[in-house]
Image 1: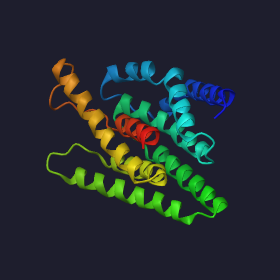
Image 2: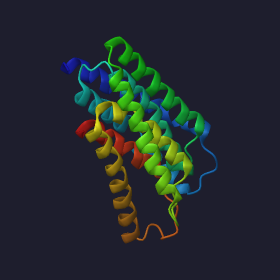
Image 3: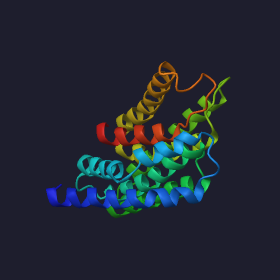
Image 4: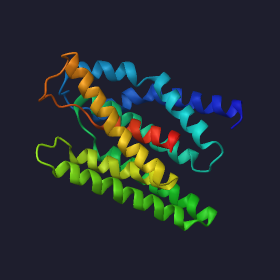
Length: 213
């Protein structure tokens, strides 16, 4: 991708980062953990959004699915901020991300006459969703069904990219979450029974899966 185009995508991400907080506030209920809202403002501002967009642009280049991935990432940033603030993944936002991914990828598949890629995306959603249903049903699991639905949605773009991207994205999400939990426990910032959001880790893992897979 030309440098000018990459800069343009990064600037677009920065603009998205500006509108994420007001959009997230529309879906934010009274926070389960007051400090998390302050952290969300720090970590999910324009620099993070610009980095997310630029990373996808570098990874995908001139691929026609880039706008689809950017649209899903934009909704994902709002979802992450809401989850950090009040431990919720609102269904309307998850549905919006799913519809953007499905419609966009279906359109690209039709234009490219490549139905196999769309089938791979749907298979990715099934695998990601089923894996997280099993995790949610394990005794003592704190995985919510909002997380299950988000994982299924993220399985669409990861499945489109292929098996390696799907596995990388799913595994890294839980590695990141586990490392964060251990770090917070070691720093005595949380207790063993403290509920922590998984949505941001799922989204970060999917982003890394797109970059590395």
